[in-house]
Image 1 (cartoon, rainbow, N blue to C red):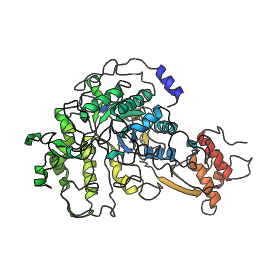
Image 2: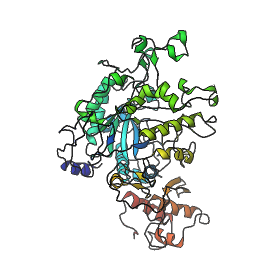
Image 3: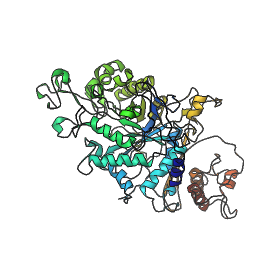
Image 4: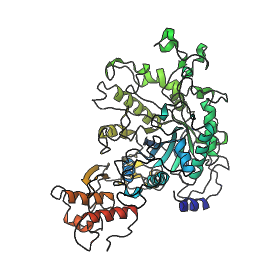
Length: 591
């Protein structure tokens, strides 16, 4: 958010108490920061029924996805080296994802706080002219924090809300493999400083709804470094650290939702083991019944939360637990009962009942089954195509979990949007250079996205509908019932366009195909979809590259001829439209 917006929003701030009764208590007088203007009306809280609700007490459903890159060294979302970032965010919203989990690192947050230079940044300046200082094709990339704030603004205009997660202390593609929230480069104090700064910076912009304090704390005693969960103040006690991390955030912005993940293992105290027990009983290796610890996916074990719940004191209404869960293609866990070799298993034996009994219930599901806390499944996903999942075991697991989350209204962020997640794949099809969505996977996930009875996707913003293609509504639309039902249900159709510019650089833009009144003059609207944006620039360049295959209509040529005094369509018209999209040119046509 710009400085002007932040300042204006702050001027509206006043003390307002939002009552949330029951187990989570009433929000204290000092908790609600601001009058409900457009930057403060979407904060969420947890009620007595362990539901996440808006300021009016209406239950909401956070159904989103992950997009990584900031945590791995790209200094931006991965894939912006191939695609237009603004258009990608539009597409995420148009496909119905109302919540975006963005992995970060302590390192990059402190870099931004201290205004330190980027070591590098992976953007394609030809496909993202708006991300350059000059706002032109091939320009100089802006500072990564400035680009991040552009992403925040674009999420806002799409009705998408954001949650960052501290994926690792040090920026590194493999940083998530380190067990704790601090390492040899960045201390716990650095982590707390980064959290506090970020929470304070965005306290007057409810686009940033939540912070996931640390991705997947894990480890076992024999590893030497491990996260535990108990009532101590030990340096590796994740529960104790999470309470400190939450306080660092909530002291700055008491309206943030705080996501706390679990750990990896928990001692079988019922069998006499404790945190000093060795990780493995090698005398019974391979038999989970004899092992000293209850195992789980990294970040997925909440057995300790029953006896040692996270205590946020006056801010308890902001706590959400956030497990991760994966299928057999990520790891062949015992509860899948697999036979044969991966991935060509000859059999598998699990369903909802067995997963609840053997793993889910005591590990994390009891929290929602017993109305103790809402859950947000921060990561779930995987490959479901016949080539990578020939046995169908992974698809079966995803279906069982998906349907359970729908029934229990478990919030979730699918892993992931990226095509370059090696063990899971993503919503973008694998090995296509970010060219198109994996439609099979999207169709699988789509039933778990928040929709009304007409199939329209619901935003978490009270005033801004989700997406740009007309198939989304705002939160107020949903609860007021004032929106006219559609005559037919419309879903997003994506059109992928590839062309070569005069600089011999391939440009690919994917835009939502919408119906509009054609035959009317609108300067810049070369593709006649009713809007003037990057897709029009691409349509012009495509027609110049291959006029026989990609000819514009007569009206499209008239609309697209925005410079040169009526000299006809050229690539200069495409460049002017790009400048118009970036705000450098304010009116069309130009002299």
